[in-house]
Length: 329
Ligand code: DGY
Image (cartoon, rainbow, N blue to C red):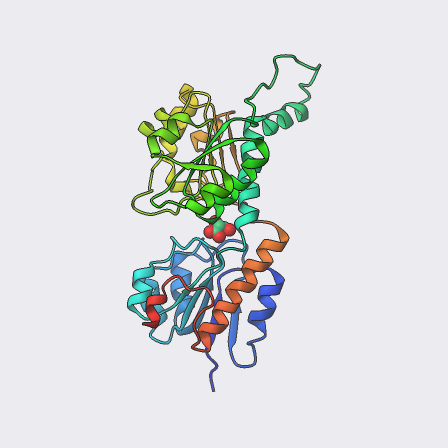
């Protein structure tokens, strides 16, 4: 008798893998071994006939793919909090619950946004390159100057869990914290001394602008030429959310022309960034390869949380973290 199948689209942290492998007597499990994600055409083949799909943000999961899977697909479990790579309405229409991993990466990602902020302000990456290139000849009174962080104004776009985590850390730096979101968070405002403002005010008054919103039709290229121009010329932009929230061509112009001073990105459009992308020719930008959640502890938690969602879905139980609970109505 053939066993129901599970496809895992990449090698995942050990603890999550063990949970998935524990299903082996009853399920046939395939884990994609290549370090690069399966191409869409390959995924179309692999999903055919599966009961459970364990996927990552690098996999495009659209209606076509779900249909290629077949009516027996019981669950799609993603090892990420973001799910803009998955067509959620299509999954809901097909009655497939989709799981994600909220909460566990909040602190790790907020820490990393701060690491980028500090590295950009204090020009740590530039300094490191300079040292390695053998250019460090003396202590320079006007070398590598950057803005103070303490006492500066921090503008947070998107004030959900991670945005609030960034605000919490700003308290230690005596910063004025502004935020822009489509909703108000009175409790967090009090807790972190944050003030809700409109987007233009935030861009105009902040020394640091950090993005923590989801990617949607509304936020696609939110940071375009016009909005970058609203920032201070000394302003620093940080993006640990999703690449396409920033228009990369506009960002290049802003950094090259001195419209803003610096940017620090963990996410890009496209991802990975192409080796000939003009942004890579600039000195006033730091680009990390989407690693904000990459701590040992957090990646293990994400992997086990996604495994728990997968297992619940296979059993026909409600996913502990489901992004489309409408499927249960
Ligand atoms: C997510 O989970 O959405 C992050 O971008 C990767 O950790």
